[in-house]
View 1 (cartoon, rainbow, N blue to C red):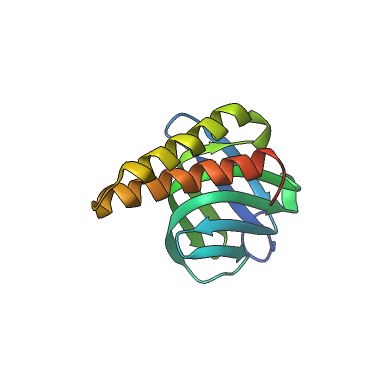
View 2 (cartoon, rainbow, N blue to C red):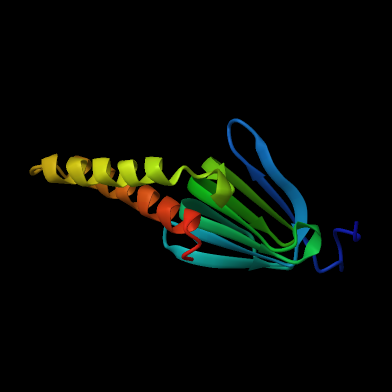
Length: 143
């Protein structure tokens, strides 16, 4: 393994869910879905704590190679030499059950139709739809 740390040019990347550690490796760059849009972390980046959205984490180079993970909700901490992703949900795209994701999208549409005048219900429906749509896109390799 390449020397990680000062002057190595590699980030230590850790992807964790409440159930498991999906990744503990190094990478040259990490693309992440934050709630305000995608961001890319590189070695030496300024510290950042962001809320994780739904979408794909893409790793480039290092011991991670080129890898993709679907993630939804949580937090990411970016430090100059390390990226820690704490996700409520995370999986490889090949672990996604496409039929289940499509059923989730249909359910989200039903929630949206039933929301009435309640903003909280609209927000919940939109969040469910976002996760389902991103899961479908990730499973189909459309990102």
